[in-house]
Length: 212
Ligand SMILES: N[C@@H](CCC(=O)N[C@@H](CS)C(=O)NCC(=O)O)C(=O)O
Image (cartoon, rainbow, N blue to C red):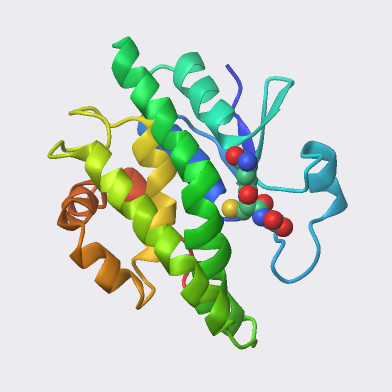
């Protein structure tokens, strides 16, 4: 089977989730950097992704975008440890968590807090403090819910690393670097325990976003 190519920047949370799936499976892949912070989304990427987002995958003539689809494809097509539970209820829980991350967590934790607190200053702009303050209750709710679903398990779904963990790692990693995360994580020590475990994985260390 030929090597897949992933188009997206190493700093992107969704690109990192797709990379994490390939790293965990032991898949050899090429990463083609696509920048959208210093300018508009490049036209070639909009051809790959009509909604002008990253990442997109190309493999043996097959083209795919949307990270939850990419993760499942990578898991099912390549050898390596399974990233989806066999048990129907656990698999449903995994899908539920990915949906919670996409629908409720990313928009407030990354789209508001991380963009305003970490990205805006990096680009030489002032953070919008009102937008940050407005996002905090929603972030807190998401983290409480995710901590509750994890309960005392090693991973978000029971004792097996799944695509749900790989979806959350990049979001959590940026979030934990904001000063606002302290108070929210104080309330959710279970998420810190989860991070202590997953952050030691080689895949997580190898896909660390570039600093600055
Ligand atoms: N639903 C998409 C979301 C992808 C997404 O939001 N990617 C972000 C980067 S992490 C992006 O492309 N942002 C560029 C923009 O919104 O202009 C997926 O699952 O792949």
